[in-house]
Length: 207
Image (cartoon, rainbow, N blue to C red; front, side, top):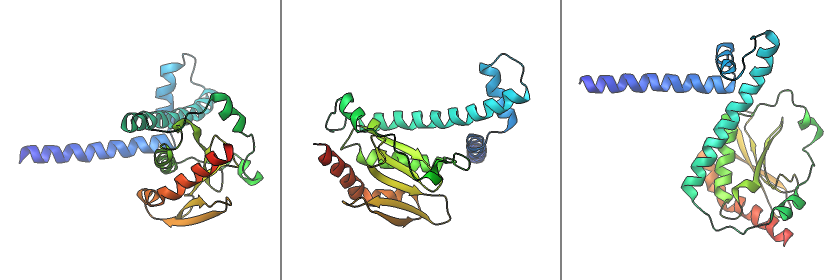
């Protein structure tokens, strides 16, 4: 009985700590920013430094999560059987085209953990067709885009998660988007064939 109570207590506090970390990753508090700043910056912690490092801490934590997920995907997937493309070939397909002008306004753009999780699910689904590094995410005000080769003309999918009803956007052979309502991230797997078909279509265009 004592061990059961002890285990339950541990689970309670572990859950609370995880929620606290998630909150800090999403919107870091000043104490958290100050703690991490002190690890890498020796100067005085002024208002200007606080503002600068608040942005840096937010970016660093998101990149850290991305790196951790990428490492787990690599370990889980091993070496998938995808066609190899030379770096020059990939570079030739990359475009600097951006989403609609409305989406270029950085104010109000907030990449959420849920969007990053959705992105990695899509990436895992299509990595049997292309190298994972070619599947790129680009956040915007109205949607979270997942692109092949960071090319706005090669959308694999879109995550419309900035509303009460979440949607997964998929594309047909004419690159017309269909929004599918979803309630949980694992529902993305139900549309794996459509996502893979989009990637295959773009690979066919390049050949």
